[in-house]
Amino acid sequence: MSGLAPAKVAAVTGFKNFLMRGNLIELAVAFIMGAAFATVVSSFTKVILDLIGLAGDVEGLSDVAVRGVNIGGFITALITFVLTAAVVYFLIVLPYNRVSSFRQKEEPVLRASTEDLLVEIRDLLRDKV
Image (cartoon, rainbow, N blue to C red; front, side, top):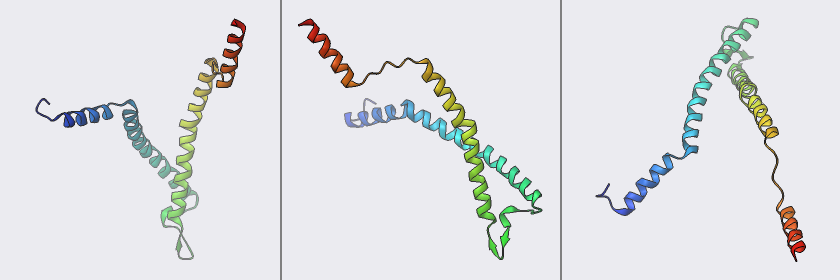
């Protein structure tokens, strides 16, 4: 990079630093895992929709029409949303909250408010004088 102007070197270095930040890598991993997770939830949703179709004696739930109005697509989207939300909550959010609560119990609370610290400093200074 010795042939590049200093501004270009700084730009390339800044771009490299941007790419190597931890939160960008974490975001990329989360996106990839989310895409893979979406496939699993989508497959699970298809199984549930097939079971609902069997129970209701309907071959394709997406094609259900009531008096000529196709509501099957909406029903399919609604069921997909509810199942996705349930899977995310029960398999990700709930376990994460449990682990977080255990971690918070183990960590001692050492935070005092700024006002409390200032009062303590004032009292210590008063005692010294």
